[in-house]
Image (tube, rainbow over all chains, first blue to last red; front, side, top):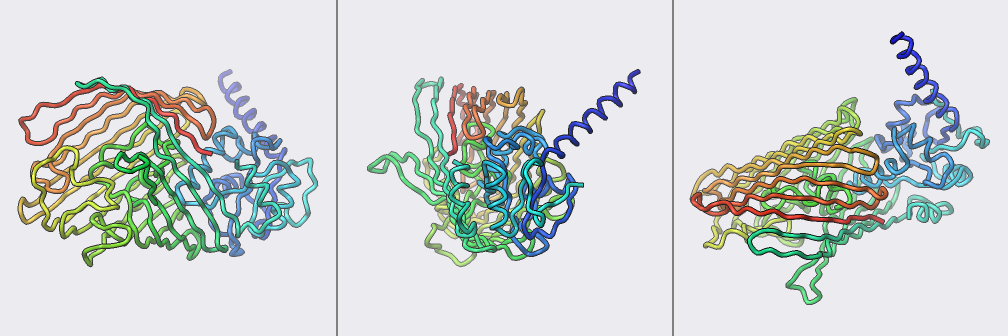
Length: 139
Length: 347
């Protein structure tokens, strides 16, 4: 019985994480990435890298608290709330160890910004149609 | 503010962007020592600027205005950090300018941002040992390999110098290394060496030859200053730990080698997304034959509570117990209890 319960909770957790990833999609410009694992994606959005293999500078684009996908991104990438995501980046920038990310309010702004800036990477809702060359698959 | 800045960036070239931020804090202190007193205090106010010149070169500046009783306006500005950072390759950088000496976790992460401090004040060692700033050049690497290895090697003006002058040839040298083996954890060691020809504390020490507790004639001959540090930091969802250990030696021809140490230990327990209860111990001991800081022994213990109203506003309330013994061994400890409240913010 205990094993059944454990199995249920493991599956439930997996399904929840999976459903969150299916609500959003990653887009990037000249990042050299066509697909990325969840682990690698977390590292990118936590500021681990300065440059892409394409030699472009990594520019992180994150949703503001007003953005509809902010809670999903915060949960998925930072394993926390929007507040903890903002706090994480404020601290990192203040340390001088990373350039500030760009916070944007909706999918249109995100697409527009990423299209204009090589090296930029961010999230948009799955319901929004992304320009084909920008989509990065989450494995 | 973040969203406002982002709007302005939409139609612009990101690489010409400049961002401004501010940090500050207010305090209330009730000191229940021998001469009881209580007061409100306007803390440091910090103007923080980042800018990018091109894809590889960026700038960071941190300018602080703080209370100074000897100033006509009772406040004085200071440049705390001001440097240009060049991304040489991957996660490797060259930095030139005034930095916070990356010797331990606290000095490398929190700087002047009380918003980020886990407790109200810095560890005691910052008032005596830790050379807060260096003006010079730095090689930096970060997030290298699976352990997220990082290094910082700095050559620059030492403890006795100012931001514009040094009276001797030898620079100070520091090197620190850290790993981040898991999310929220950072373990690091650091070493600093400086040779002070006249034993003066200048702009970069963060302290001033025992001005508060030693009133006798001061040694003004040469002194070799070594500092070794070890930091362990873990900030997780259920527990927060920060330990800052420092071992300092000073050597003079007059009294020989003095061995000093300090240790700060913080333990926090987040009880919700907004609330953290915490405790800390802080101890510093300076040898009787030390001629830079001069003999002292201090301890403090604290219990506190932090309420985060948002990611950029928090309130800390802290009860502290101090044991303080300065000068020669026969002096009894001064003891006192203090209640401190700090509102810190960033915008």
